[in-house]
Amino acid sequence: MTLHERDQTYILNTYKRLPLTITKAKGSYLYDQSGKKYLDMYAGIAVSSLGHSNKTILKAIKKQMNKHLHLSNYFVSEPVVSLAQKLVEHAFPSQVFFTNSGTEAIEASIKLVRKWGKSLDPEKQEMIALHESFHGRTMGGLSLTGQPKYQQAFAPLLSGVKHIERNNINQLRSAVSEKTCAIYLELIQGESGIEPLHFEYIEEVMKLSKRYNFLIVADEIQTGLMRTGKLFAYQHTRLTPDILTLAKSLGGGIPLGAMLVANNLSKVLQPGDHGSTFGGNPLACAMGLASFNLLSSTDMAHKVAHTSSYLLEALKSLKSKYDVIQDVRGKGLMIGIDLGKHAQSIQENALKRGVLLNVTHQTVIRLLPPLNIKDKEIKAFLEIFEDLLKLEQINK
Ligand SMILES: Cc1ncc(COP(=O)(O)O)c(C=O)c1O
Image 1 (tube, protein in one colour):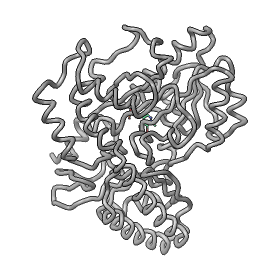
Image 2 (spheres, protein in one colour; image 1 turned 135 degrees about the vertical axis):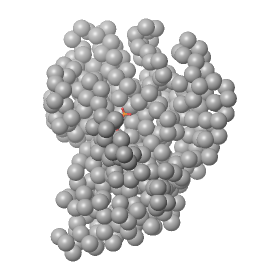
Image 3 (cartoon, helix red, strand yellow; image 1 turned 30 degrees about the horizontal axis):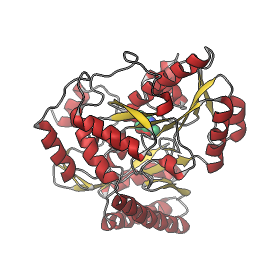
């Protein structure tokens, strides 16, 4: 049996696989069995932000491996505390709870906001989330995720969750009340096709959170860690969230998530209220620390700003030439190209040309390349992409 046949036999059928067998990954490229290389324009869905097989991260693994892999949460551990300290120093005065994934960071936050709300008033338990949001696939995260296609088969979900339209201030005003304990925001919705929240909308959320005393949870699992050109996407706005969730590239390629909790809330969860066997694993945090040191550097911020404006300008000029492009939007290196019904065939043809593209929301190519992708790699992508646009234009 081939690897793909064995995959179908032994792995539960929850993922669509690509017809590739990757044997090596380096920098911005994946290599298949025949040695053919593929430019990775989504970096493991925003996980491999420093490219594949990054030397600094590999060195950190080896160093930590020689000390210990796992201790249990009965012990303090240097890389775990150091990573938490770095996150807090770069975000806001807070404390960190580490998890293994994004959805677990969301679960932790749900428990916290509920406990906090109920401590003020037994009825203060309502959570607000946005249509087309994505907050994970465990039952709590799924309850917040505003996409019926993911939810319907698994109802009943958590009660007390209201979904409202993104950027609709009137709906926001009528949804919130004294019963609201928290609102969940992705500053740029990733899964729904790179849809940013408007500045005025965020301002209104901040205003209402003061009036009704509810918490703001920024889900930066996708937008965080320099993806949008700032370390955290909320730093583009005037918002400082009460809770920040992170994952994806946090562990430098190993499972790691985090919830940062503002200091005034740090007593809400008490010993025994929440925990995780692997959350805050020393190896994951050692990789996370090595990765964070690179991601948080001013060099990286400059690099992302440079690559982002190069890519965005080039894509906007392609949009003016090819009307199959309906929209180009995003920030930093989180960019959506809305191609309507052409997205799927462009993705398929790109694969044949050695470029890996991700399509989300059916119509949007979601670019999440390594943050250190080289100019010549972006140029190669743009050349192939323009060829594919020409083809679509002809076949329209
Ligand atoms: C904004 C956001 N929240 C939560 C999640 C869930 O993270 P994970 O897949 O690590 O559970 C994702 C994953 O794509 C995400 O983009």
